[in-house]
Length: 268
Length: 304
Ligand code: SF4
Ligand code: SF4
Image (cartoon, each protein chain N blue to C red):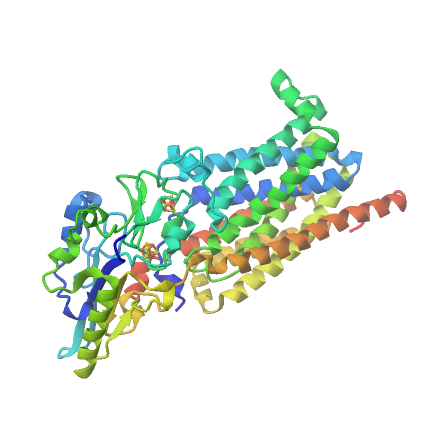
């Protein structure tokens, strides 16, 4: 059994070239949106806008400028986090979403029936329907390449090693070193998703960020969808019990009305 | 900002809204029919029979709506059986959508049996096979079948709200009250459907008055739960500033709850009150689903 594999993305060295997006699309043969005719978003250099069924990598551009000479660009290549506790996998009613021997999360396209529960379940907005297959799709962490000993297309293509592929244990050590290095230079660097005791049991695609997670479009405290199950079910049961009692009481009343003779029926 | 704002919308739109509405009515009507079946008198039979019929047709329509809504409709059975491992069953007790798929199937089965039993009672079944089935569902067996259908009906009405809560979407996952709200709405709309349809099968004035009395109470419960739901949303409530908030306030609360409550209490024409209740139940699904569907993660991230 291979050890858990994943990505460490060091956002400080991303140059926004989108080589990862292109490599991903090429390897996975993902179609262009709208036949390749796209409106420009007007939002920085970001015309991809989001991860979805045909965009499994997405480079975010965050412009933080206070004045012409006072500012910075933040860039981050976003992808499925291959959560150790994955919300998508948890709810999928067809069993299409599986955990592989590499501890990654993969959607089997021949099983998925396009119910879209996983889209709403993912805390990161990673999944969407691929209009060609009619099924839910996302990054597979290049399961096909891993199987034959190749690294994923995106990390292979990344010219700055912003995306690094490897065993999770080793990546965590490397990431911590980089954080220490940046901190010694006075940069406020934090890891996001590297803690196995943290949110979702750790993310097998984790990040080095230099600002709040929200700035990068990441939730501060991602959670499993079933966190709401017990409470929501018991409140529903309570509501059902109240209405059940009301329905029964209505009928008992009728029996008393009958005893009370004509004219008393339906008096409320 | 709630962490739910970073998730993606599942494109659950009109077909699902319609399903939630129809499923609520079917479940609610079936539950009331079962209660009246068990504890009502012989003069209430038209209400019972109508309720089971509404449940049966509602379940069939629900299944159709859910199937058409899938990205790959022909694979609907993948929710019931492990597609690579037939006949092993596919069931996840912790996933409302998985649980629900089975519940609709079983609910549909019991509701159809009860409806056939009701039609046989009226002597309306001419097809020999259906008449045989309908004729078998009577007496004690009919009560048991109807009782099971009624209990499953409550589940069908409410689980859709739980399903929405067991996600990471804004509004839905931000409150634990949606399931309770849909249960109450299922009861009120189920009663409303019976008020409108039962007279066609011979329901007495007295039966209808009792349904109206129950609908009144169900509407009060619904209003209370709606208040709790909105209160529990906290800062997420800013999503209501806009069109869907208006629909919720004017359509659901005003037209769908307060107006029919007044009509019920003034003992005005029951049918008008019932129609308003149905409208309100539909708009409740529309507002809660579309308000969340409209929130796009990339717009949130970009501060738009
Ligand atoms: S990031 Fe989303 S899609 Fe990826 S494994 Fe986690 S829950 Fe599933
Ligand atoms: S859309 Fe496909 S992968 Fe997603 S939950 Fe439904 S069946 Fe599973």
